[in-house]
Image 1 (cartoon, rainbow, N blue to C red):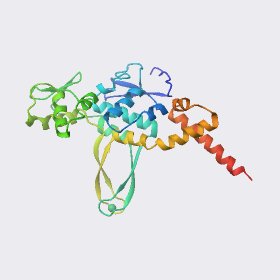
Image 2 (cartoon, rainbow, N blue to C red):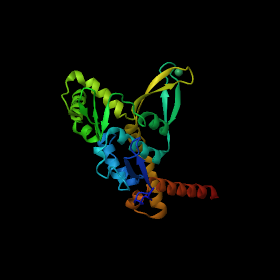
Image 3 (cartoon, rainbow, N blue to C red):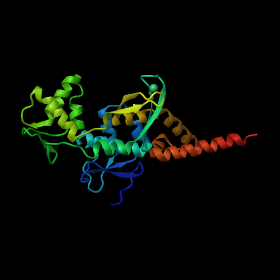
Image 4 (cartoon, protein in one colour):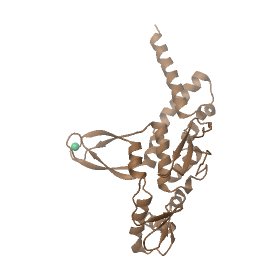
Length: 274
Ligand SMILES: [Zn+2]
């Protein structure tokens, strides 16, 4: 593998976008300017974040500014890779049992979820050729992209779903009766990290559904760090005299490491006082 170039924000990773390994993307790690640019938790914000993080690299299938052209399943792979590089491979949360009302923690491995959900889509009867898929009845379709999602964003939800399917059907008529079959085919060939999981209560054993959406989970995790980031910037500005722009240009990892060192020095100083 060719050595990736270093970006201003830190290390760069290569993400394989599909099971064949032929499509790939290069992502740099997050810096404070990326985190500060986030202003919401939807698809447009996720695309803007990816466009900031995408860099050119050997064999790149998608470049900065092109994240909206990716099928949703490939976008979810990139978002999972951003999460993994930023927070690690564990997804964690707290649930309240619907049966006994006990709160319990749950966590699962993101790599396993990606492998189980995205790696080997089963689509019997659907032929694939260069990004287009053929149903047994001859109709052809493509997978929805972020650009498709953004194009129908302002429509009422049901109308948006119809419009999205019509955009994806590239050959053949799409009657209202056919939409469930096309929707099922889309889910088979382009699975997403937006799914129902099952969690069991450790107190009473009750099983309940848990919705997991990679995009919302990543953007939510980044939004929750806004306050701690203010403290990190404050500590570094006081300790080193760096400007806001200089501090936010640091990779998140490096900023947090410096801020932890400064906090450690401060606590040592406090303990050493008479
Ligand atoms: Zn329970």
